[in-house]
Image 1 (cartoon, rainbow, N blue to C red):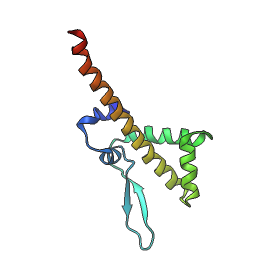
Image 2 (cartoon, one colour; image 1 turned 90 degrees about the horizontal axis):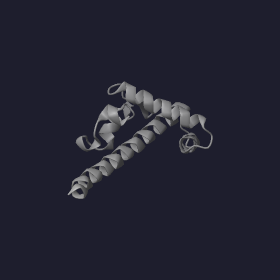
Image 3 (cartoon, rainbow, N blue to C red; image 1 turned 90 degrees about the vertical axis):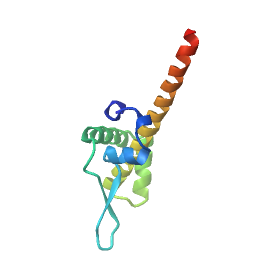
Image 4 (cartoon, rainbow, N blue to C red; image 1 turned 180 degrees about the horizontal axis):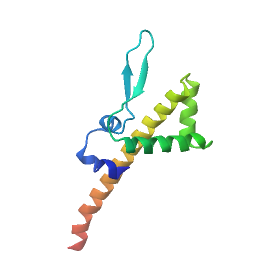
Length: 117
């Protein structure tokens, strides 16, 4: 997933990343109901990878993703809305992992010249 986006230090915070991977909710007009759908723009392959990860986690009874999905269902969300929420949750997690990896590799690059000298 990180190869699809590149280095996170070059990009913006997690909200634009969620918009890029199509997991950010977009409000749609409705008379009395607050409805959301997912953005249709951005990297569809990354969106597909997030969807696959969400489906795998939903199907695993003891996973953290299933617990999150069940919590959203208990909050009276539809299964489709709960899946959208899980995809956004996974998107935020992927963003945090990408940042952590970038920081770790940056620290390693700083240490290499010092140990070579």
